[in-house]
Image (cartoon, rainbow, N blue to C red; front, side):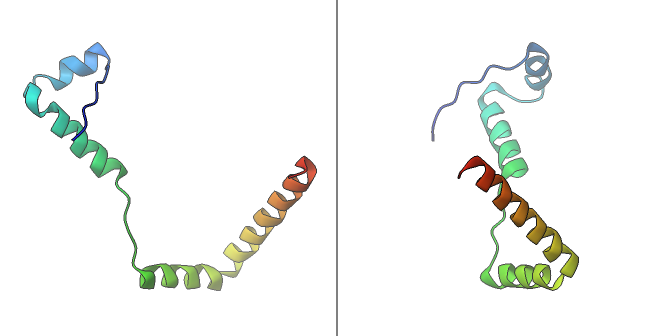
Length: 80
């Protein structure tokens, strides 16, 4: 486990401290961050099904192609 020192607004501090014991505030923040920002992993089958569904959506494919062509044009103008 690594240590992290945080500075928080006094109002937030005053709100949090009565809710938790000092020793558990790290656990509370870690749980919040993990819940809020954890990344879901997908199986190969889920990825393939998602890509097939996107490829079958002609409107999505048209918009994606327009975006790619626009990006290519910008890169050419920038000399990249």
